[in-house]
Image 1: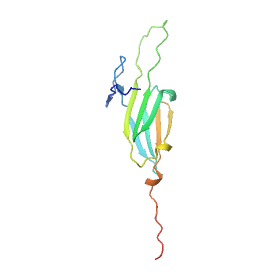
Image 2: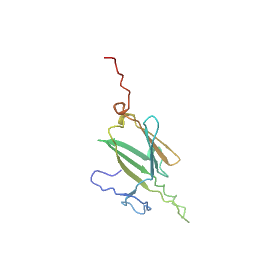
Image 3: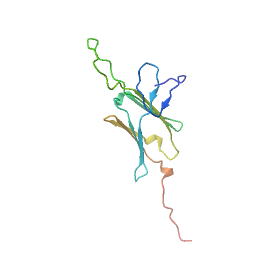
Image 4: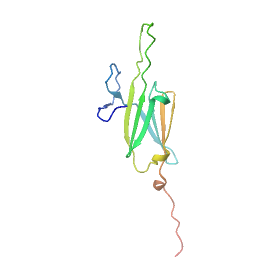
Length: 133
């Protein structure tokens, strides 16, 4: 993950990472809402595993970082063809106050990171009881 003084650019269209220090890719995401008000964010992070993903929330900002880089082949092998080089992924989202930050859940399966962003209790619609006067 980038240190505070490093710049991390997010690009709309991916390009392969070729040398150390090049920018991370912005993963493709789908965002939808369930009937109970929970927002689901799914991000494609091919090559990344649970131990190589970092999801953080700080001051209303959700940050996703994933390392999808492949390990180098053994020294005694010569690469004949390389079609997938693996990359680092980085994307930032602003969260509204309607998201319960303490109950966010994350899972990863088959290169897809899924985040469940439950609605805060204060933001849920509730029916107000009317008492006879």
